[in-house]
Image (cartoon, rainbow, N blue to C red):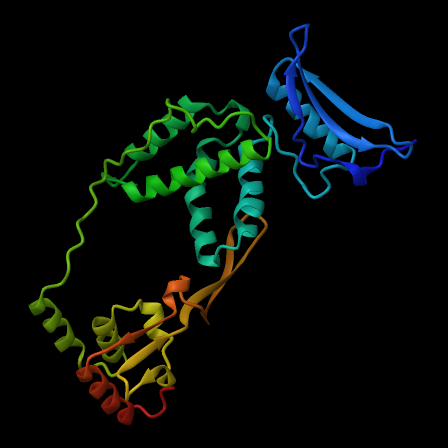
Length: 304
């Protein structure tokens, strides 16, 4: 009798891996019961644990148990395929914004470029450490290219990619999840961000006062601390002149279209929600700002 695919217990190939008496390794997975109630089981063997598991996933895919996956990921998968699968199923389908997805794809490009043609099973902790060491030392026109934030975010993404591979049984081990992995340290010195002094702020506002569209936005941002995207999405209805309060419920964002490789093909600015849930809020503002906005509204009646 044929097998009943509806009874597959482990569609992701999460079978047990064990060593046999002859020294080889076996990967076993339960396939449920056939129409006669007989339990079915498949075993794939290999010289190593990874080889046995890779053969199992390949068998499951060929026999229709991994139909939801277009690419079978295992230790012999190329880095290019590995990254593409992660971008589509690990990032794009996770609900992140288009802007964040675009940034993440850009951060993964150095890793893909460094390991082009490699199989993911070949990348060990030493190779990961060498990769980040090269990133730390990379220069452009005599200046270090990557700061600590860039290195930290790239390490986070690459680590997340390998962690997902282990969780989904693509790989047995995460090369970044052991004591030998060295967290990257940037040689680029980050510039310290300091707040504007009262005199500097006064000079900037004086210079902008003649710009009827820019000055009001900057003035609101200075008095409220709201993000640029939030200030640009404000409408007159968001301002309660009697209570001296501004409600924030929208923000400008980017709506992007990507090709199958995660490359951005187009982008447009649209009005969406604030960056975080906490971004929806009300801000009490000084009377001086309310008075200014009331006067500016008289001069700009066409502005919504």
